[in-house]
Length: 219
Length: 135
Image 1 (tube, rainbow over the protein chains, first blue to last red):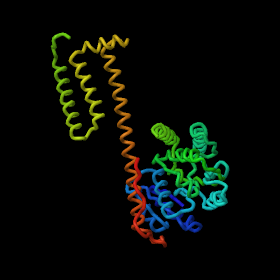
Image 2: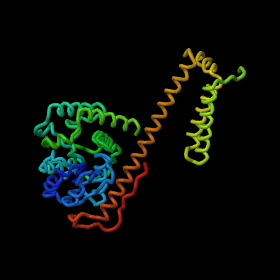
Image 3: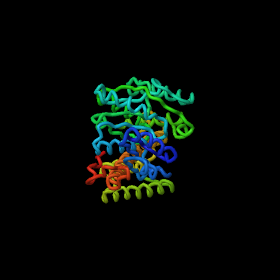
C-alpha cells in the first residue's frame, strides 16, 4: 500500500492504522511536509520514506512504487492519506488482479458511492472524465481517483514524470500505452471538511490540465 | 553604406552589445555556454550591432519583406527571440526539476534502507539497489 502524504499529520495515523489492520505492508512517502507527518508516519507505517523537499504527489507515488518493487511487492495499491478512501475497497480492487483478469484496477466513485460530494467538485470531476476521454482516449467513469491497484508487471511500467497533480492523467496514458488489461472498480469516497481542504479547486483543475498538456507536448 | 555618424544612444548600445559579445565569448571559452548556444547568441548580438550601426538597413529589409517600417521588423524579431528564450529557459527549468526529483527520490530510498521504521520487521539488509535514472 503506497500512501503519499503532504502535511497530513492530522489524519495520517488513523488512515495508516486502518490500512495496516488489513494489509501489513504500508509505505508512507512524506513529501517534504512541514508538519509532523514524517514522525507520525514513522510511528504508524511499516515503511516510511521522506522527500527532503516537496516534489508533488506524482513524485511521491513514484517513490513509493519504486520502494515497493525493491522490496519485492507482488501488488501495489495507491491510497490517499486524507481519509477519503475506504479500506474495504482495497480487496475489491485487488481481486481481479489476483485472479488474473487484469493487471490494473482504477477506482470509480461514480460507479460506486459518494458521500457529501459538493456540486462544484462533481462538475469538475465530470469535466475531467470528458477531458480523459478526448485527450487520453480512455473511457473511464472517474479520471482522478487516488485508489489504484497494479500487478507487479504493471507497476514496473509506471514511470511518472509529472511530479505534481497532473500525474493522474499521465498514469492513464501509461495504462493505455502499456496495453495491459485494466478494469474500473466501484469504490466509496467520503468527502469531509478535512479532505475538501486538501483537495483541488476548480481553478487548480485547470492548472493541472495545462501542466499535463505541456508535459505531454514536451515528452 | 554612408559614413557613420553615430548619436549617443547608438554609441551606448554598441558598447553594451560589445560587452555582451565579449561575455558570450568568455562563457564559451570557459565552457559555461555550449558552442551551439554561444554561436546563436553571438550571431544575434552581431545582427543587433549591424542594425544599430545602419538603422536604414532594417528599413530596407522590412520593405523587402513587406512589413513596412524597420522598427516593426526589429520589434517582431525581438518578440520571437524573447519567446524562444522563454521556451528554452522553461525547458531547462523542467529538466532541472526532473533531476531534482530523481535526486530527492534516491536519497529517500537510501534513507529508508538505512533507517527502517520500528514496524519494519524484516529490517533492510544491504544498500539500496536503486539507481538515479538518466533523464
